[in-house]
Image 1: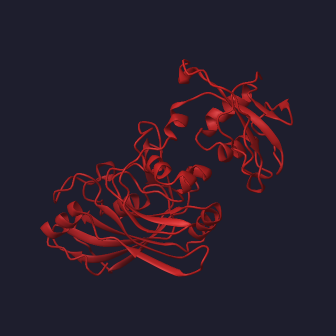
Image 2 (image 1 turned 135 degrees about the vertical axis):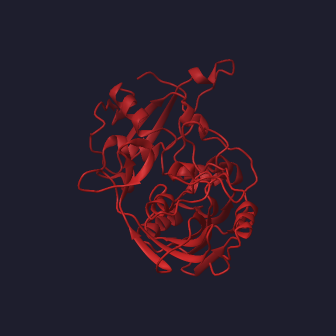
Length: 341
């Protein structure tokens, strides 16, 4: 591997990378970067490609696998050519990187972010409709991650800029974002243990029937007929993960219903799929059987309540966000009361 300029370091200990002058006349898309890394305790015993995905988070795991196969990764000064190689805490290496759309996406972009609360460990934000949370194909810029990097320079030190859970682009509402690694690790553990209460307000088609509360326990996986969708799946026949949602009717009439959804797991499109599976697709959710109505052309879903114990201070915290104007107007136009949410 030839010697190349090192731009930033993935070394979690904070050691400075090697430095070199840069050719200002060169095309950045043609530049390479030699980045040093050190395997941490969190990556001990993992596959090399998986560990690198955590240490160099702005690149996809598949891209990193290609670099390993091409001999662009070294461990202990020797080429590492097997993505499946096991790594151990304290091992040092370096990787030669070339810019990709993914890596270019991890750039600060100033944007308005509504912050409801912040301290040295975390920040509570109210995400608007239309904002993509994390860079992905088709959305390599203008994401919440880009905004967080501009809002807080320390966010560059955290995987995914401190994002520990996501909302769909057209879902609005509350999110907790970590500002320290200790808080991030603790928040991830709290979410996995279902100790972060996340509740959503939704407007759905069809009049509610039966008991006011319904507990939906249905595994979710990729729809075998359409890979762009999620679906309720039989785990004996298809890959997927368990998913549980408590759905409670707040009000209902002949046009539709207002419901409160409490997540017990956090799967992709969970509420949208579970609502559709019980015959109540969300208004505006064309992907899962909903149609535009009540003035809404996006899925009528808002994360209105977030409650948890602060991961560092251990103080109980609760935040609420009123529905955005379009959802509030839609509920009102159908004469539905959501104030019990």
